[in-house]
Amino acid sequence: MEPRGTKRKAEKTEVAELWNKLPRSVSSLRTEPALYSGPFPFYRRPSELGCFSLDAQRQYHGDARALRYYSPPPVNGPGPDFDLRDGYPDRYKPRDEEVKERLDHLLRWVLEHRHQLEGHKLLKWWAQSFLPGVPHVVAGFRNPEGFVCSLKTFPTMEMFESVRNDRDGWNPSVCMNFCAAFLSFAQNTVVQDDPRLVHLFSWEPGGPVTVSVHRDAPYAFLPTWYVEAMSQDLPPLSITPSPKD
Image (cartoon, rainbow, N blue to C red; front, side, top):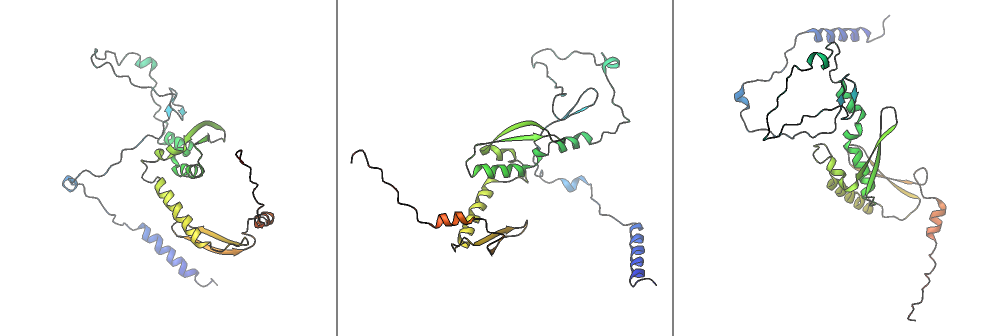
């Protein structure tokens, strides 16, 4: 005997497969030029994040070592005069059309230079350095094998410039305004002076900051010796006599 619901489940599967095989109309986009004669849309010009290059053997390099640059002739000088056929059969190496490179080189560069695409990592460095007044951050970048292959120094006050033109980047004003609001919220929330009382602030993406109150372990983090030492009265400060006295 089949268990209850098995036949109904099989019928639903058959209906779903039949639905997937049926031809369905998809939405379309009209292409008449008259529909697009309005003002020029907003467009943010892309900025260069880095480069990669291919050598004569089409071997990948994650930097500009194999790039060749065009040097324009002088404006007032004679025009270029060279034979495009010179050396073509001897030095020109045609690309192997059987090898489909597609986006492999670009995707490899993205994978190797993820640190340049992660603007939020700069946010973490900036927050950890700006508040205590650290002027510079030295970052080591590793390759996919885990070896540090380059170092770069980031001035703390200039980190935001790296993501200023990124529409999804972070804004230091927003960060500091939120920091001030959170500290004010914490000051107004924690009103009881009790070393055994712990206020746990929590945040989940998309939601507000919440607070819960706990007592003792496992949230308490101040050691007993520290609490006892801070609870004692401070000895009076010795007054150094002035040379005039």
